[in-house]
Image (spheres, rainbow, N blue to C red):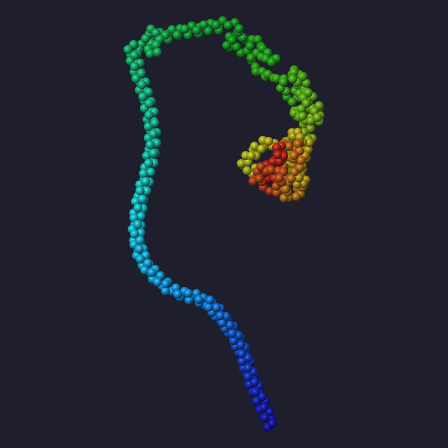
Length: 462
């Protein structure tokens, strides 16, 4: 019995706990609702406050503008009267405007008629101008034809006058007779009998002349070989000497001039060379800066050739000359980048590529460039390779270009490296053709006028 009561009590406690939880949940929900309502009330209060503030602001504005409204009220009736007057005037204006619109339509219609007539007049004017052009062209043709007709008429008139004169002359000849054997005349002629007599007489005179010539030829005593006449002679009976060479007419002869020598000949009879060998005379008598000799001739007194045969001397000096072996093999072929480098064709007359006779240079004819500075004291032609200066994107400068010994100098610059250009001491004549591809060939000229080094880009070697 006691267990049942305990169990019942437990059930009641559980039921009470369940209801307690439900009540607790309701209370919590009510509390949340209260919070929500409180927030809404706060929001509503804020809205009410804002509305009140707005009303207060509008009331202050109304209070400020109300006196103005009172003043405007007193002007409403006069304004109404003026509106009525305006409406009456508007009715009158509408009537006048309608009348104006009608007149404007009539005017526009007349303008349209005028435009049509103007178009017709313009068309007629254009046609008139066209006809005037045709008349002008026809007048030019007429003037040409008239000039030709006038010239032809004057020619015919001249011809007519000539014919009239001829008629007069013919009539005069007919009157005086066409044949006149007695004397010569510009208007009369001989008879056929007279002409035959004159021809016969002239033939006799001609035959007598031929006989006289033949007689004189047969009587000539100056005969040649085999007693033939002079006209049939094949050689001179007495040979003659021409420049110490015997000549009888049977063979051709060659006349030599001892003053013109071969490379090994002498001119012993020449007063100019004083009987000495050409090389000896040129070396000892004529003090030239440069002596030009035959390839086997010697010049013992010539400091220029060092007293050795010119051929041997040139072999020893090969290293000082620009040849196809001393510049990379690519120099054998290159093309100009522009066919229109007319300025270069003029400058090239002043810039010989191989200036081997330059008198103001003691340096090498081909000098290596070992930095970005070209020293013009070192030579005439310059070459920059990867071996001598292993850099790219070079901007070249120069030195000693304004020295007197270098002014007027010209030659070649070959750069294997890739270069970006030259500084202000240089001036390129064709910068538009310059390409930074490497293996670039330039010719240069140092101007004695402004000391600038003028460059001409010739191309990139292949």
